[in-house]
Image (cartoon, rainbow, N blue to C red; front, top):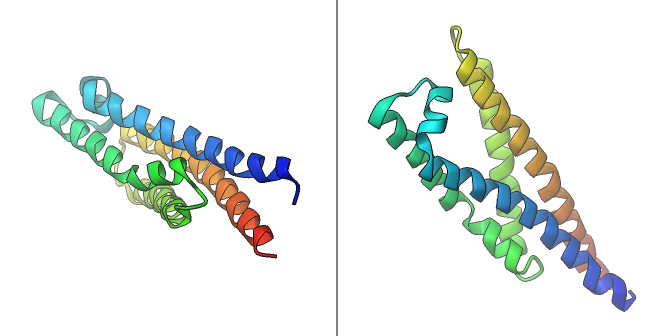
Length: 143
């Protein structure tokens, strides 16, 4: 393996992980610091609605801990990258199930959940590409 490829592959994976982590944390911080902007999309109002959205934001920060380890060093923390892929997949598929099981007419909730499905689906694709790059890179180093 040439020196150029050795340095590029983990860097590309890190960029992909960084993109997903950035958008996940951006969403978390918006939910934490501007909950009133998002509560209506979940048919929530007032102080309880804001607290609910802030709670979701806090959960988003917690869920991104493995992403941060994978971002720092995807070669050393490949398990964290695998965890991030699984978490992203659980999010996307879980949201899809929630959307399919939502009863009644709730256009705001449906639109919000659909945005999360698209958001998490795009993140899942990027994380899967990063994981494939890292696994291929590690496999080529052991040959």
